[in-house]
Length: 212
Image 1 (cartoon, rainbow, N blue to C red):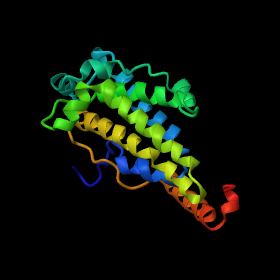
Image 2 (image 1 turned 90 degrees about the vertical axis):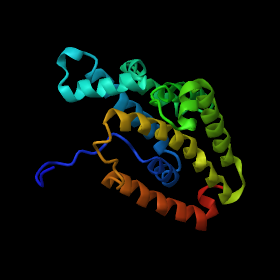
Image 3 (image 1 turned 90 degrees about the horizontal axis):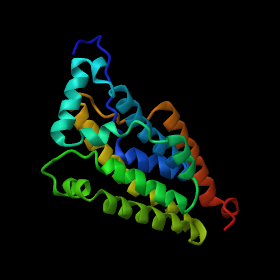
Image 4 (image 1 turned 180 degrees about the vertical axis):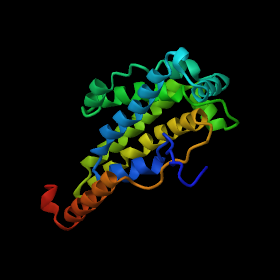
């Protein structure tokens, strides 16, 4: 790579980013993550739908998915109805069914590997998604805890990070490990963290803010 050639970021998102941003945003980042993760898939799958328009690199990407046994699952990601589903992700109880549905879809994108865990998830996508949704729902209920312990509900981001790790396996294979996953936060994400840290600090020192 020449010094003047731009560095292209991977479509992967570090799973720990999801956790950090969710905690500092008091989980308001969750619907943002949900839409962004699905949008990346939908956009790429739609772009590669017509094989006649693909260049060599894109055809090679589809070939890798074919060898990994995930091409059919990937090509079905062209119409995910993300706007409606993102809205539903903001509704209690309903969001569990939405998360389960999409997590099951994303689990089918995991390529064949020697890793027993990822192979189990791929072979049991519905059950794996059920566990994700149940864990998410259980952790959200921590917001009923007294005092500042209610902040533990932000740990509901942990099962989402698990789903992100499944997507990362897909993107890593799709990109043939050519691009580096972004580790640094974007300027907007840094602002979210700064604002969130300030809010968390105020909640910690002033219980009246959260009414507890």
